Image 1: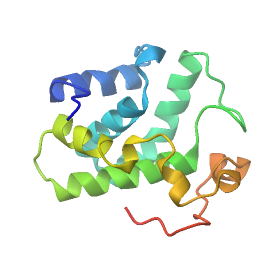
Image 2: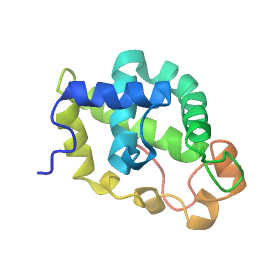
Image 3: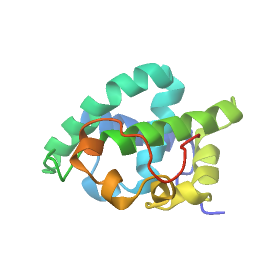
Length: 144
């Protein structure tokens, strides 16, 4: 199994780097997205993380010269689906180390950047509506 981060302290540094907008853009990978999400979810719960994440990501994008527009930057549907999926894994493994949960998550279909296309067509998922707000899946129900 691939180890994305050696321990939970590394995941905390990642999440804090995102929040503080000091994380190098080259480090902001698919695994890093889920790692930061897992740390925030464990620290703050789903409701608070869902409330905070849009502003965290938008601010980070701005700090790394990634515009938040109708075709770039923050994406609400992807973010909410990812948070719900990560939260479900946390609930299934209470108290487990985050770096182990992340490695397990990345070994599933969620480890592929296109994992949401099993539920949403490209046209729907990458629509302006889905970027701006939650859009229900059009291919298969999403139940993390």
